[in-house]
Length: 392
Image (tube, rainbow, N blue to C red; front, top):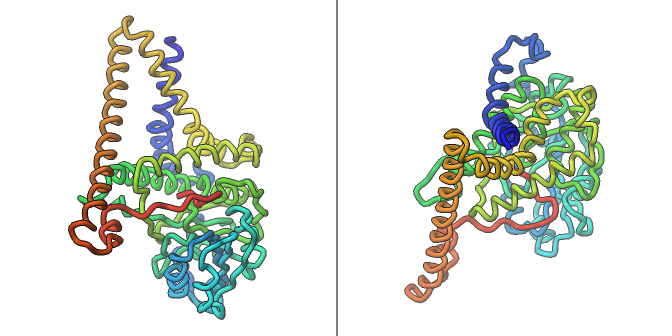
């Protein structure tokens, strides 16, 4: 049990402390130690006449309420219209998607396919793309006006195969009326972006931000229809092909956090399942000589898959060893305190949600009016659940 305790503790510590420390030292090391040259500094600006032609692909399923604002946002980007194609793929939508898109038919391309999942929708969108740089986006988010210029600037370097922008969540700017889960999501997402920024600095990111990333079309390979994490599989194939996938925080997209821990938990489970699936779809990722970012992949992706089991083993071994030494007793007490605090936080969230539901029921009685505006103020709208929804 002693071995189980220390092995589990070291694994958890490495994933969340050791690996970030390693990345920080690695990124601070001279360029020669990072297998990069001084000339590998990413281009930040490109003259207008040198901007590449891009095809923006948006896969959507029953997103009619969001599509008008989304298309307007893409059309308003600071990018030459003659070098920008917008492809909206309707994945078997049964709402008013076609009617909503009709006013834009002369400025965008609309592709309709039977309901097949997001991966198939992306494949259809790429098949309709006309240009050499593919930009992937969602219906839910919005881009900053200069996002497309910033996202495509690094492609001036022919060694760059893909570029990921930065997704800015509202929970990163804590507000008094935010749900309790938002603060935790904001902290996690800042940590995740820190990792991606440093992974980019030492070579390549492990995947990309699904809400805003670009890829050379020459590196695109059709996705298997069952793909869960398209924003990891497609970029990692570019890395396996010998190109870099880099992060630029100058290209920003904006989104809202999950409204509850239950929604965030579903997203986490989906992400972990997608990481397991990656090993089936691209087993080369496990081979050091084939994967240039093998250390990062094992540390960032596979390490997190092992953490839940390590935590379970840590608790079990702590219980078994608690009467042998004060170290194990303290470890057990610390874990119990941690899980009790987590449970208390879940209770607070449940109580907040219950109070919000009570207010929703009471307001129409008092006001006798429409509740929709009040409900929107109480919580973020629920996210649609569908096969292959973008991973944030």
